[in-house]
Length: 310
Length: 175
Image (cartoon, rainbow over all chains, first blue to last red; front, side, top):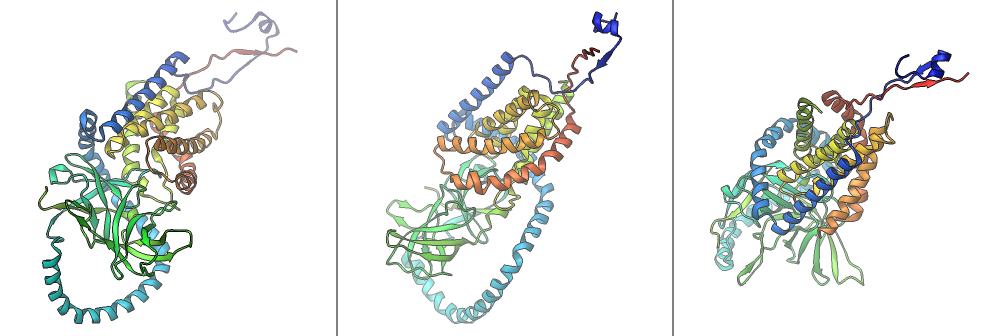
């Protein structure tokens, strides 16, 4: 009698075989399973704890830096392979928004034509005034900074962080707190640096802030990310008596008070005011800004490295 | 798991982690981006079980945290638990369910977002709940679901399934 047949079934001669099924293995016994998950969770918690405490320095920072350096060629290679696909995506995405932007751009072109004529007249006057202002103001930009061009290699995922990783690090002279810009305006600030890469906190991060000024009216405030949005900014802490109008340009204020100074040099464009509002209960005006920088499609940036570090 | 399969499996996770941070996370649709690495880890866990799932999640998270210079261990912890849960689901109630990848990916996307928010809150990071748990999660949920079945099929093709053939007991038919 075959091993799996019972006397009763053998007597009846009726057997139905179950179809063998394939299922994931049970990954060992419950004890081994609990041990592995426990160790992995513990390892993660230890890593988090060490990482938060060391803040990028110490042995863990060294390991992370070495790991990032080793893995960087893979990222750069993949980035180059992925670039055409990203371009196609960007092109498709831009098509969707092109129609509405075209109307705005036509109106802007008209305005810019008129401004260009006025600018020609103002140019001669401004050359003289600029020389005077440079002499009076002291802080000289961009003469005080050297640009370091860097390719964007990684974009941390998820809704929790707004940051990028760039292929320039301490070997290129980049340090934490160096401002980062691109051709459109202010991008953010360097928060962590390894030998060959750096993490840049974007201006759209919840924890990012930059002192800013309305170029036309001189109203000052702090540019922050508008909570609950992806790429909208707000100019916070604008006093009610200050004048801010829709369409005004907001740039970095670049203040200096004794030994203290803003992280950002003054005059870097941030965005254009899209709405201004205030209520009786609020202490400050509510100013929304549309940033010039398209934070979703950053391919390369410039790190502003001070010419003379303290 | 043979060494060849293990190598292929870790290679899949490594490539998925790099793809995620190089290109996928910048493919923003309606305010959210898909999480390819999460989907791959869930698919691998469904195919290989809870312990490999947890190990692969930990590895993938570690790669992400290293290359993005983020807080080490955060992604590892989230993906470890995601891989473990998906593996347990496959070993128990999800067994032989055709829609298991969809159910697992959908559920884990929501749970991972909630747990991630909680974790960042504990780390004193400013994260807006409405954006993290609704604005970005809703499109990410849909995109991850769209990726679930194709990624599961692709991963199964690359690494195969963990075969554990049950003994074939006879079923007696009493007349």
